[in-house]
Length: 137
Image (cartoon, helix red, strand yellow):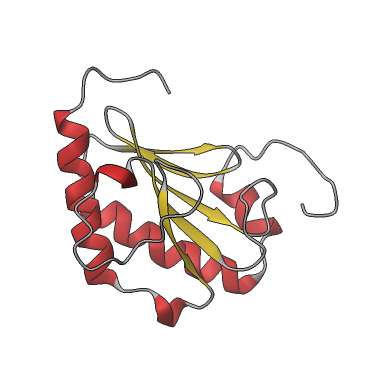
């Protein structure tokens, strides 16, 4: 995909076919944590060629470096759509140049802190529930 191919990815299978093994493993672990901890009415879809999770609005996104326009050169980014509103008491997330999306980049599966992610997901869902009406996705 980095070699200039700009085809639209429509499924996880398509995504996994083009990713390096390390990124596939990281994405698989992150997806399992997210799916197990989001309420059943929250959904996952492929958006921007990557896994995107939403309730009323966007909750989080998983962006591997192999997919262009993610802004990272290595690893897999877990971004919280409204990270600027999260109570990140542990300062787990990075506050980059985007004022809204806060994120963590993982270069290996061992770096994933499930407890920290679960705390942030619960907070993100709480914020999503307080938001206005569901947006069209």
